[in-house]
Image (cartoon, rainbow, N blue to C red):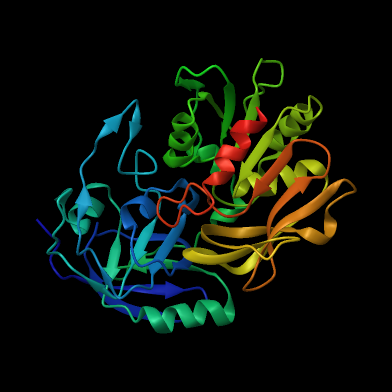
Length: 356
């Protein structure tokens, strides 16, 4: 059963208040308020570990009309979701549809959120809210129902990667080539993409030192929060770089590789979260439309000798990828595995496979 239309509100740290109605779990929550401009893909988005600790605003005006698929595990991986749980702390939408229609739907979005204890509000002016976040920058926020006390919470001050990463190594596939996937909050489609290329994957925790093991290549995954919190991961990457085995980083993996190389990262004003970010390959006229979800970026000006920018964002000129000029190290800030979003850059997985 759907939640009754209980009034609730979103409060931002600047004092602004947005009133709406609950359609999820009815309890207070707090986090970093961010927005995503995608039109589709909320089941994948809400289960993306990179959103851990955040209150997500979806700008598309109608949400919920195709429901939520059921759990379907194939080869030990959830087929319809990007992890085994919802990671957002709260959801904000303009109009919510409790009625849904899709061949694969098993329940409504509101039922799914309620079952997983995630608060959600509809009836919010998401256009006004998004404009405020764009103008003023990402803010902390809290969802309140009555006169409860709920302090603001800044997720970027904690090691979020340690909260979402797996605890023990797990192996997938039976290919001849072995890839170490460093799980900083890895989306399932990264794992699916590697297995599709007939690679054997050993997925390890964020702070697991695999530098002494045998492997053919390393994949650095996406993840939530400030990459500088992952001190142990950065140290392990530096040790691995001494072996000159192929390394491919995605999203936070781009930031971690840059930090390991000696470059710097910084927090973006409001981040990139959408499925239509244009990225230009440096030195070419090729522009790819990409899926993105990040609040931090690499400062391309700080790349040390031997490294070069690989992709740049056509909208704001921020770094979207780096690579080493002579060694097999490369990474991208966007998500070639998509899920959701365009798969135009999935070819980078194939490039990585050929390097092994």
